[in-house]
Image (cartoon, rainbow, N blue to C red; front, side):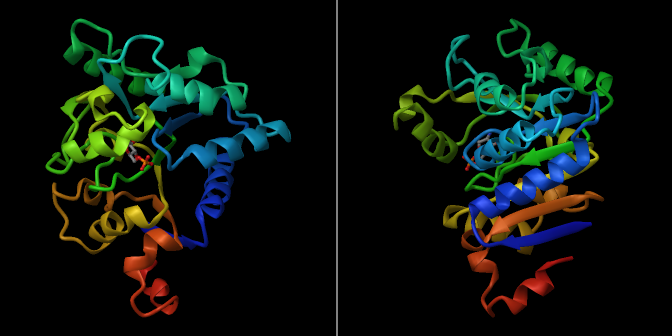
Length: 255
Ligand code: GLP
């Protein structure tokens, strides 16, 4: 079942997301939280930091990342492993060895992808997976055209994603990696619960394509719509295109 929740702004999304994350995995030793990078979840990670400061125990989690760039030097601050350690783990007193990232430095990348799938299985699967939505509809680094049956693999970034992500590299597209290891759509689908955060006007078209279709590989997120527990937290700006008849129409969008 998909639940679509309208919230006023991005900070409201962060608070609602933190509420759900804490309810699902807070204080549960060895619970597995799947995490996304990009801008969308950053406010949620700050909010989780505040919850940890006020006594919620998140230090016993395992955190499993969706994806990682291929080709950035070890120690680069924009490697997703570094981002998650900085933006989340350090705020919730999570030891760094509990942050799990695909081994993109391996000489055998296909082997590293298979090992990552095995790691997720060995951890008992992902309890709650946080997701963002790319402006072209990508989920993790599953670009338009990705198969619903896809597993963890090496993938090429679209030009649009390279442009979108250049803001993390001083605006320089030439510094953005062209490849990544990403969990596949089928891998993501196996998480017990999915929590997608969608904020801002720049996501309105992608959110509309996700919810109104047509479903298929051109809108990768549609592969997740039959998940038994998918919640989409969206702010008004992102929902704009879905509200032609005003707020009353949102009741119809909840399903
Ligand atoms: C990035 C990440 C995704 C993320 C998406 C949206 O490239 N690989 O996991 O959800 O793009 O990013 P943002 O939230 O910055 O718009």
